[in-house]
Length: 233
Image 1 (cartoon, rainbow, N blue to C red):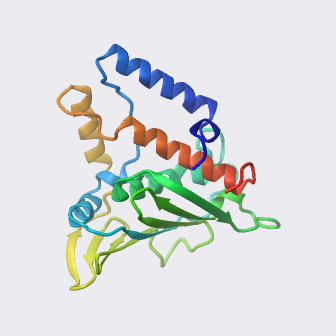
Image 2: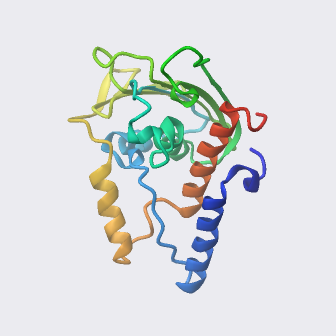
């Protein structure tokens, strides 16, 4: 990735400086949180436990059947930031959580939205390489059906094993078909809020390190620049 100053908007730069000031004023305790919830889900925690003692890098494929949203939807405006900044950021955080290392290389492509009802950042293919050797591909699409296909599917391959997570309802280990977690859709919101409350109370660190929050924000902004042709890959 390029120099962080090139990747991060002026607003995020201000947050970085505020976080530094907060740590200095509170003996290195920075209370900053972004709602990247999926890493806290029970299925993702079970997957992370499976990968805890891995030897080799990961190959990860995350597919999101996001569905069409009209231009008038709040997600598409300044408040939401569009599909990449507003939702794909959650997938970037999840993949970063599993890799356990920062992104070292980014490539991004989109469909040509000319003549369609879609924005350029509605349909993405993003390839990532991490500093420890893992690779990931995020396919985020608004072109798919609202019925008959789940929204989120993650496949992870490593050390001769594979895992499939379907819509945060089920995690399966592929070699023997073992269901490692199953239940109603749980994307980690409650667990995230509980840990945040404990951090505010001072009984635990913040749930996500500030450096990872800034890194994921920088990545989403960089992908946005790539797909709109504002920077080279």
